Image (tube, rainbow, N blue to C red; front, side, top):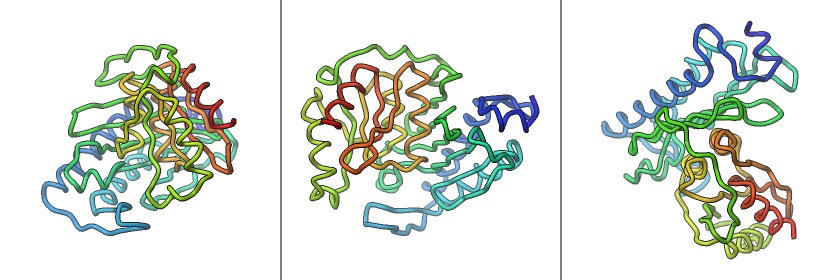
Length: 272
């Protein structure tokens, strides 16, 4: 298949001798290793929107690494990175492929010495996620998967997600402290949280969604997620036989993922 065919079909493909899944795996593995090495050597840190919204030299270096590899191997695809990379692809249709990069997801954890951080990439079209890859260096776990690629952890397929109601599973979620006063965020989140078996807050959206794909967490709900925080992990959940949906409710876009039964329960609570 040619590069033009790849862009216009929106499928996960093999281009320039390497398939998308293998490429994505190599990208996050190398970016995560680079970030870990830079952390050990010492880093400069900047704050963005708040004391907990931070960026380091490792975030930027890892994003450059991923973007450079994609320019080499997928020159027809668009690239969007959390740290500012923005490049248009050669295709203009709704099926045009875009790579979304989160070189260090969970930077606050990363800089605080907590293990819940990762490198993540997601490949998507306007129709939704095609493929995701997430590498957590501290755990030595590499997750790859999507609709056309059953999700794997370290090369082994995960068990397909079984349908279980929300009240029987754990829920991963988060609201920034500055959002707690906003009833349009707080009240829907409380309804969903109160209906779950227990709550987990991991501090990394992609690790959270990988945990859902692996059956470690039952469902995830986040408000107004950015594409690099959502698409890599959403693809993993889909590849594990689960559901990843964006639900419009109370003036917000709620990003919900999990097994089909739990997601249906969350959706009903959000839109009540």
